[in-house]
Length: 114
Length: 221
Image 1 (cartoon, rainbow over the protein chains, first blue to last red):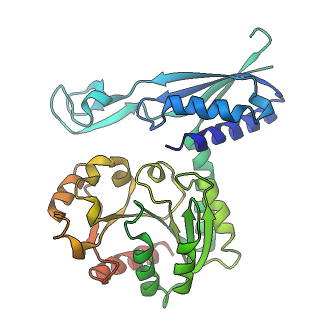
Image 2 (image 1 turned 90 degrees about the vertical axis):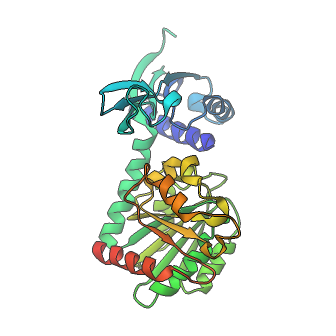
Image 3 (image 1 turned 180 degrees about the vertical axis):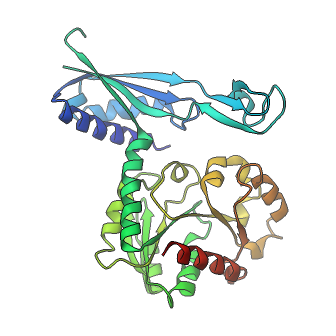
């Protein structure tokens, strides 16, 4: 829902990183997007394609997205399971004493720079 | 791509927001501001409840309000008539307030900062939950017409919130709203959260909430 804001955030961060590293042109940007981060990949791509044209630093940059599957840990039976399929209830033992191990992240992993 | 060097960035969106949220916290601690992040759906009664809060606190504290909306300034006008210092923030289409926007908004209330500042977030049960603005209290309103099943549908909002007002409680019968069912839906997500049934319109139930809130404010000041 807030993908446009997220993309402006990303581009602002890239501008800071570019300045710190004396980079004037970025060739590619890799984002890691967790399965339950609330970020819709297709919308990120649309917003990116719209916004990159307005930003000289990234106007030719390729956007790469690395999805991160959501995994939950059950503290009762000490096993992991797929979050999206089973939610908060462990499919192995039925416990609700569970927490998300990974899948909520949204991060700029790396950039390729000239 | 041979001409390109790879730079490891590893900046999470949350870390970027957290930087600003930390600055908000620092400002609030330094200036003695108690910042409330008020979140709810559009039409849940945020402004009406806020006017009740202003009425109840204004004898004791100076109050500021940051109205965050995609557009318009109707809410800022309403709360300033009530005796609070109000600033209207336009999020420029964004569906939530983040740390940076909050920091900028607070600057408009300085240098003589109010003791209590309420950020009336954009009406939305999804995005505001994901962005910490550095507040002392995340206060949520669920209104009766929205239904007692909302904790199941918007778990993150109900997880991050620290106090829930169930507003428009005077209409519970009309809308078949079951407060006990609502509490039961809330229990697995946020068992500790205090729940206050209130009516912004009639003022019903506001007293215990205000007493609780005052205690929180005094603890932080």
